[in-house]
Structures are given as structure tokens and as C-alpha cells.
Length: 248
Image 1: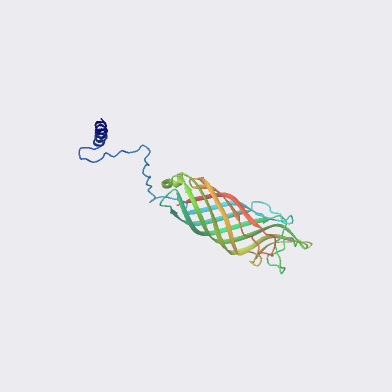
Image 2: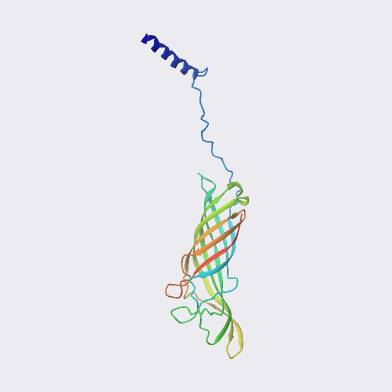
């Protein structure tokens, strides 16, 4: 009886095995419904992903003491050429490096920045003999920006949501002031332009972020290093919020 039962079970399993073979005696391939779909291939030959960027934004200094007042539309104007390198494993992500010029123009309210003074620290309020209507402190840097980028549609980044975070390092090209001066008692009115890097930190590191759609993004920056050298004055750190245009 046991032999008969064993033979029936063996015949059942043998029939099941042959039922899974096709006419060429090869097992039929069973595809799982949960099998992974092949990754989409993107054509990036004509992609435009912010290879040129122009930025304009409102700028101010953090860390200013009560004795330093800013006014008006203090601004930053930046222009960069960028090289973009998509990740092979995920073309929606890319790394970018570039080169360009960054400039800050900060307007002071009735303060005079004596950047050519002989003091150990930069004086902002030496106005005993003059009346200052407006002073602009202007700095310019050659900069190398680095970004980690994400774009929803790598093939048409000019019509897609995008976001980027990064950092940029800069070397100062020039620092100067432009002041409208009136000498007290003499009624002399003139425009004074001065240029000097003496009090300024000639290197800077800035954190950056951008978010937007297509060729236009909102950007923000915060300078991690101080505008002035250590011991040369208050630790002023510029921050900027503005609009960035990217193309090419």
C-alpha cells in the first residue's frame, strides 16, 4: 500500500514538472508582476541647465552695531559661467562648477567709511568736520561657485522645477567707497571716491541656495566669513535675497 501511495505522489510531481516545459524542453519564464521596470534613458545632448547665470538681489550686513545704519536698495550683482555634470546613475541630479564675478553695493545712512584711514580699525562715524549724505561701500570678487543640482525633467530643464544648494569661494578684486560730502562751514559739496583693501578680508566663503522653475529661480546667500579682517572692525556678514536668471 505504501509503495502504491509513493508511486502516485511521484507521478503527480513528475506531471507538474513536465507541465512547465515548452516544446523545446526549456522551462517557461515566469515574469513576476513586481519585477522592476527598466530605467528611463534620457537624451541630454541638447540640455540647457544654467550654464550661464545672472543674479540681482537685495543685500545687507548682519552683525552691524547700532552705530552703523544702512539705507536704500543695497544690492548684489553676480554673473557666472558654469559647467554641469549629470550623474550617470540619476540624471536628475548633477554637480556644477563655474567661474565669475560677484559684487556687493551697500549704502550707508549718514555714515562715512574711512577705508584709507590710519587707525587700526575701520572708522564709520568720523564726521566731525563733514556732513555725509550717502556713502556706498562696494566690493568685487572673482568667484568659483559649486552647486549640487536637482531638476525634475533633465531633458527640458528650461521648463522644469529645479533646486540647487552649494558654496562659492572668492578672492577680492577691489574695495572702495563713493560718498557725497559737504564740508561744514565751507559749504563745499563734492563726490569723494576712495579705494583700499587695508581693512577688508580679501577671501570669502558664501553658502548658496536656489529654487524655481525654468530659467528663473529665487536665490539666497549668506557669507560665512566676515567682510572685515579680524580686529579691523565689526564682524559684518552679508546676506542676499534675489532673482537668478539661468540659460544656455
